Amino acid sequence: MTATQSEHVVGERAGWRTVAMPSEHGGWGLTLEPVLLGLIVAWSGAGVALGVAAFTAFLLRTPAKLVAVDVRRGRWLDRSRLALRIAIVELVVLGSAAAWALASAGWSWLAPVAIASPLVAVELSFDVRSRGRRLLPELCGAVGIAAVAASIVLAAGRGDGLAVGVWLVLAARALGAIPFVRVQIMRLRRGQGPVWQSDVAQVMSIAVAAAAVIGDRRLLAGLAGVVMLAVTQSSWVRRVPIPAKQVGLRQMAIGLALVAVTAVGVLW
Image (tube, rainbow, N blue to C red):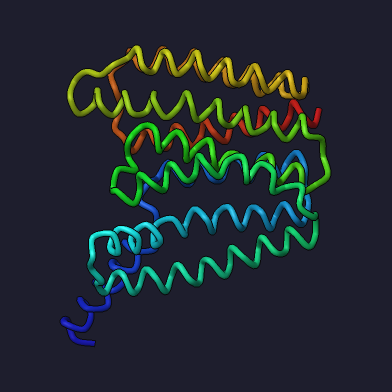
């Protein structure tokens, strides 16, 4: 293979990654957490299918957004065609996983999906206008994807209270974490940021997690985890900010720890 051919292959691979792979590193953790929590507290084959559907939907967002943006701007590029092909494949996988869940567990798990749909729609509307990095769409997307945990619980035939509760715990984690991370990155880049916004978000996260306990008292451990996280982030936001990559890795570890604590409380 000549140097020119090698460079062409590398360029194709880079283009494929740009079209197919999400650039939001935090989105991987926010998608993994509800799938893990749902399957740990309420394992089922239908739940596995919903987990596959959730990750496929997360991956689908990137090529679908590129196609929508290019159509909106009245252009059709090589990347548009590639994105469309990838989106079609992922749509088939998503539809197959959803059909599997329906065949295995019926329709009950669709209720959280229906409730979360307006939140996802808000996020997508911002994405199409290339404004997906704003606070509102990020919060809507994170809270919306957390509904997967509730769907997995319902697919396993567990109670409505537990389903709502696990969704609220993960929603609380997102409501506190996203504003905190945004303030930290702002402080890192500009030297200062609205710390009060992070503080308000921590209070809101505790209130939402407290509502989860009303639905199912076994989620008390999840509430305790959210409270500890809120207190910790209130302290961190006043310290010297760390690099963005470290913030992301720390948030992923914290999210998984919260999943573990919440699951232990439910299963104990």
